Image 1 (cartoon, rainbow, N blue to C red):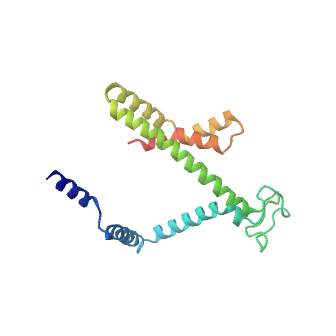
Image 2: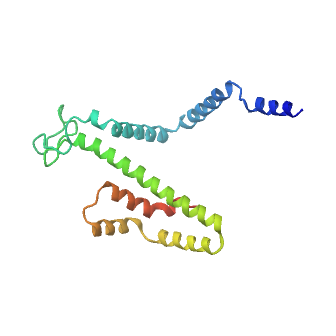
Image 3: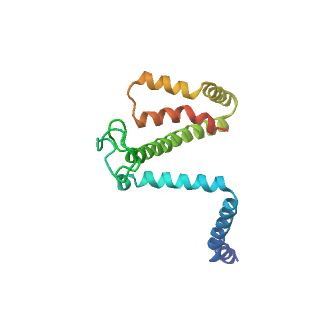
Length: 181
C-alpha cells in the first residue's frame, strides 16, 4: 500500500503537457489587454526597448568613436553625423549610444546594491525584532531624512574625479531605504 501512495504522489507531480502553454497564453492575454488602449504604456515601453537595444548594440550602431574629434565643431545634423557634432567636433549620436550604455549599467548596478542592502536590513529587522528592529528602523529613518541629491553632489565633490562605479555605489548606498517596506 505504501508503494501505491508513492507512485500516486509521483504521478500527481507530473504536470499535463498543456500547462506551460496555458500559462504563457494567459500571460500573453494579460499583457495584450494591458497595452490595448493604453498609449502611455505603449509609448513608454517602446522608448524603453529602443534605449535598451541602442545601449546593447552601441558598438555596432555607433558610426564614430565618441571620444575622438571626427568633424568640425557644431556641425548640423546630416547624413554622416545623424545628430550633428559637439563644440569639440565629437559625434553626438555615438555619444548618446555610449552614454545610454553607461547610464543603464550604473542604474542596474545601483539597483542591485540598493536591493541587497534593503533586503538585508528588512530580513534582519524582521527576524530579530525587538531592539534590533528599532535600531534598523532608526537607521532607515535617518537615511530617509537626508535629501539624496545634495548628499550625492557633496560626496562627489568631496571624492573628486569619480567614475561610473563610484556613482553606482553612491546611488545604491543612498537609495536602499526606499526599497525597504
